[in-house]
Image (tube, helix red, strand yellow):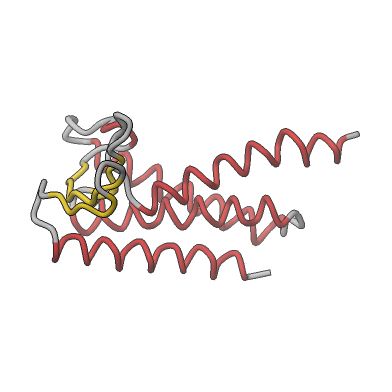
Length: 154
């Protein structure tokens, strides 16, 4: 049952290791072409959340950190107390906790989140591995709610 915690831990470690590499290897706002015209790595300091939400508020880091920590604690409590059986729900919550924890580590220890993945073929904000985990987890939760939970109620 604690495999969900292992999945979250793997995401946190991978996210932090790649961010350390980015900080040490790419200059601030410099660009490293990964797949020309498609994908670049660019080191960006994000003091906000998605789409730089709360980035320009002096309390933004604190608010986002508290929300992230409370979310992680709530999911951990839920997983330990309710012991959900659905693998889809467990994986989705693990991805979201791993991603949220990865970004909150940045906020607490750096004062900003390290973003670095930039897609070139669309106009989209720079993001990171933790953001990918959160997004995939959220999509899986939606799938769970629409299909699995609905079937369970019928």
